[in-house]
Amino acid sequence: MSGNRVRVQAARYLQLIRWDRPAGWLLLLWPTLSALWIASGGFPGWHLLVVFTLGTFLMRSAGCCLNDVADRDFDRHVKRTANRPVTTGAVSVKEALLLGAALALAAFALVLTTNTAAVLWSFAALAVTLIYPYAKRYIAMPQAVLGVAFSFGIPMAFAAVQGQVPLLAWLLLLGNLFWVLAYDTEYAMVDRDDDLKIGMKTSAITLGRFDVAAVMLSYGLYLLTWTLALASFSGLALNAAYAAGVALAAGQAAWHGWLIRHRERAGCFKAFRLNHWLGFAVFAGIALSYA
Image (cartoon, one colour):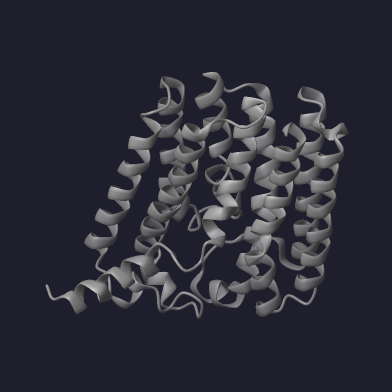
């Protein structure tokens, strides 16, 4: 294969894993790092920081490969996804699955450097990742399944640090699920017209005219659940740095509500893409609290 062909194919693989759209893996990263800091009572050490940062990127990339294979016959009917490389045939199904498997194995190799508890929980995380692409065909609110998948870094972080998954981790996972429901409903609002035509199930369709209200309620439940859980188990809710982080996150949530109020594609997509800053605000508040 010539050098030019290699570059072209590499570019297609990068497109497949959304290399040019880091918002997706950042949405996974911030709650995972928040959990690492909470479980460790501060900086978790460079080893775990590298493992979970790289692991998050690798698993999100692997998930993109599987998702695009599963949705290839649907994506061609959706404006936003019609040019994805598997849908257009630029990357074959076999290539996408092999790349996804390689990325998942690389992530698993990182987990193997932690402890037995984290390794065991990684199988549950993989199972949810495999289930989600097909949930959109059968479940009225597939965003709930995505919420579990995108929140599983939380119990894994606790397992890697403490060798167990305490109640606090599950409460944080529950709260984070509401955040995922908020931003992925915004994402689904972008494609609602196309999804209705092809029979795809999404929270934006299920919620109907209550979609904006549900998004805002979900933001509120996310921040409230995390605040109450941390107040009960760590006292962070009383910390000025954490309070500032939550206030910044709440301000961003209010702005997103303004962006999606007319349910226009551009506003909904912008709100979705900017959500990683909301997650960063919460993480920054937690990290500074321990600092």
